[in-house]
Length: 409
Image 1 (cartoon, rainbow, N blue to C red):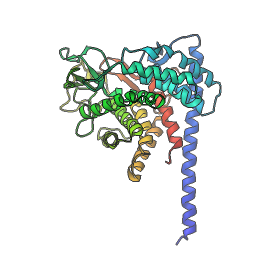
Image 2: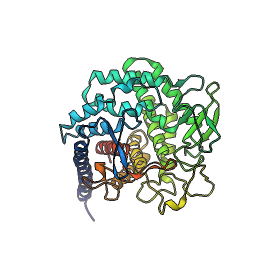
Image 3: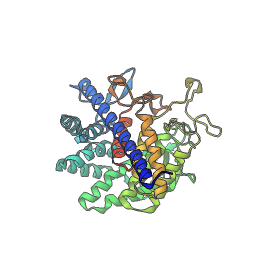
C-alpha cells in the first residue's frame, strides 16, 4: 500500500503535469496567433479597412461602420498583452483609433462590439483617458436606441421576416446582450445610473421574451414600441423561427454572464447557467464540442422560411465562432458558481479550446488569409460567410486563451 506521502507526491506531479500541458498549449497558441496576425498586418499595410473574413478565396476587409470592426483591434490588444511582440502596441493603437468616429454612430445597436472590444481593451491595458471618453460618448449614442415604453434597445431598424410578410418594426436580437457591457462601463465611469438602468431593463426583457422554458433562445423578437408587447419571435440567421441558432445561444451565455458580473443579480446568473447547460447537454452537439451552425438543422418540426437547399451541404457546417464565444463565456461563468458546476464548465471550455487549437480548426501559418481559426459561419440563410474564417472567431479564441491561462483548471 502506498504511503500518504507517496500518494501526495503522485497527485502533485499529476497537477504539475496538467499545469505544464496547459501552459504549453496556451503559449503555443498565442505564439502562433501573434505570428499569423503579424503576417496579416503585412498584407494590410496601406489599407484603411479592417480584416473581416475571406470572400472568393481572398482576404475581405470592411469599413469602420461594419459591426465587426472592433474585433481585429481587440485581437491585437490581447496579443500585445501577452508580451510576445511589443510592436503590436502601435498596431493596436492605430487600428483602434480608426474607429473613433463610431462614438457618434446611432444606426444600430452594435457599438458595444465596435467600441468595447477595441477601445475597451485599450483602456484596460493603457488607462488612456481619450479611450475612456470615446467609450462614454459611444454609450450615449447607443442609449439613443433605447425605447423607454418597450424597455429595450432597438437592434435594427425596420425590416421584414424571412416569410416576406411579417414586418419587424422594432426588432431586438439576442446579440444585443453583448453590447450592454459598454453601458455598464459608462455608468461606472460617469456615475450616471441611466446607463445601468437601460442595460438592466433590456436584459430583463430579453430574459423574459427571448429565452424559452428549456433555456434555448430565439434570435429575433419584435416589439410594439408603445406597449412593449411582443409582435413576433423569429430568426434571421438561424435555421427556423423556432430553432436555436448556435451563435445566438453563445451570445446569450456570454451576455447574461457579463450582466451578472456587473449587477450581481441572481436572475441573470440563473439564465446564464440555463443557457450554458442547454448548449453543453444538447444531443446534437458533436463530440469535439464545436457546434453545427444551428442546433436544429434538418430536424423534424423545424421548417425554414428562407430558401434552404439541403443538397448543398453533404455535412452540416460547423461554427467555430460560436464555440469560441461559448468557451470564453464559460471560463468566466465558472468563477460565479458552485464547485461542481465550475468543474463542468471549465472542463467543457477546456475541451472546446483544445479542439479549436487543433489541426482541425487552427489554420496553418500563412494560410487562411492569415486568420487564426477556420470553419466558422456568418449567415447561411443569407448565403454568406459559410465555412470561412471570421474576425470575431479569432477575437473570442484569443480572449478564451487569456481567460484559460488565468483559470484554476
